[in-house]
Length: 426
Image (cartoon, rainbow, N blue to C red):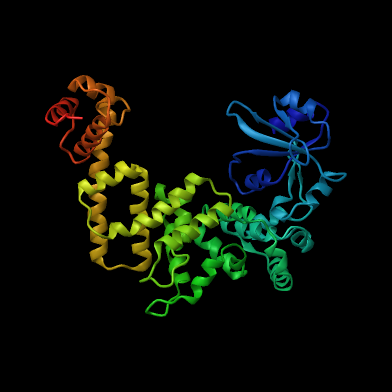
């Protein structure tokens, strides 16, 4: 409200709109503020709020931060001749509410009532909103999953009828737009979002290789698509309590772990890896996330076999502690989803214990060295052993890492003792 008043002191009327008001009405603290202004001239508002006007897009946007906590905000000119006209251009009733600085509410489409009833409705029951931008179907399902809302019966009926009559409208949508909606839709409720997409028959438009898994059966007659959704259901159940499961890469691995498979027994890892890379690249997913997803999918089956501390140490040094932890966590999710017998779960428990011991030892090094991952640098090794630079220095550091991870070295003195016992020949 203070931000609105600051804007209005410039003589410009302002309203909070969109997701900001929806979150307020749902009793959620907004993480950002969106304003609509009754002016095209944003410069004087920018001066009053300390923001800057971004003119790179199709229309100017004022961006900045406000208050002691630096809450980000953006402000846009209203579209149409009034705030009511602006709200009428929005897609869903729950996003078509405006809040004035005096606390008054503009709600021409009953969005507050729909929030209380937890239903998602097209603004004014207007199916033309979908015709104008078919990706609003994906946005609708993303909201329904993320906000745990039901889709209003008329909206549901109208959208299904539109998709049945105009499938070509979905085929022309850019892959990166699908990628944005999939990532956002799966963030909190991956299983619910994918099941909603499936119920509206959208999978062939953005993930046909997942749709194809419905025709691949296991020995019990269950489709591989059912295996994927079971994994996503387990992941969804762990999101609130398991930090690693909240990873974007973790969730995408659950979605894509079996694409391209012709059976559970004849899983072509390389084919799946290639398809994963292709899809995520087309969805404009950053390369580091693509690498993390493929690493999880490729490595997690290894953890159903016993790993001793030396094996875990070598894997941690090759991939990073987080990468190994997340692959092991994924293996546990798959084991739960597939209802593996107790022998597999016992192996996973033992592997979890061995990994924790290795990680604990590396963390102890960081505590003793104030954040360094090693007791000694390469320069210090050369000084200690009177060595010249060369490959042997790197080999000694790698060997010292293994000695730390397996518990043979746990202090600086023991690190120096271990090094002196090694041959130093180049």
